[in-house]
Length: 293
Image (tube, rainbow, N blue to C red):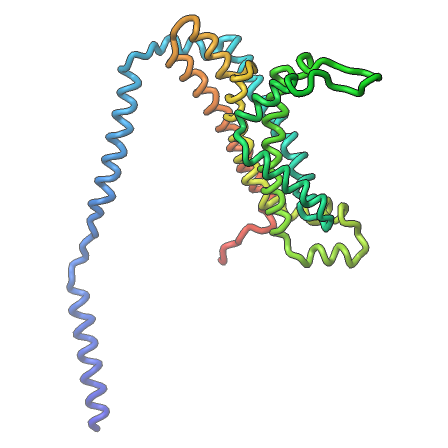
């Protein structure tokens, strides 16, 4: 009987506690820090907008130079150089990544040395070296058959393409290598078990699976390449920043022309970001996590 009474007393106490909790008033938590931080961000953005709107910026000049032929040509050269340099970097990067995974120690050492050198020296320095290659090799070609003056071959376009593309290949090789290493070792063993050659296995089995890991950083590298082309202005390549500089050297509308260049950079990066998201979604279809119903 005592056990039953104790059980009844515990049930009564539990009901009383539940009844007491139900009478409590629910008070929403006040996120004071959240409101203060949001207010600070809004105040900062408002201050920046007002500074640009009411500053010493001639906005009609900005609108007028947005579609000037020189700016549009510079924009086209920027996009063209970014895609060509990125294509060269991807081709070199894939080859070097495969070399890094080779069993041949000499091949592996050569690939590692390439990555070490071009990641260890500044891109601006490499552009200047390519542009001034004639100081080391006055002529290019095969002696006795054909020779060309290096000054005639190494134009600003070629120097920028080699400098940007070869430098990018060092970074891309590490991205591709990480993607190849992310594929399960069983895939390599399965391809070897059915007698598939190593290169064919890489092309048909390993690389398609590694694309899910490779595509996001490569997309970021392409967006970065669009902005890195501005460094080619030091070797007189006619990209958008170089052309904007040539204009404001004449009319002194410095900030206006820089805003024009920034506007077109943002447009190109926005389009590439959208394409990158679509490409990532395409290669992530098989690995996408599905939510339970």
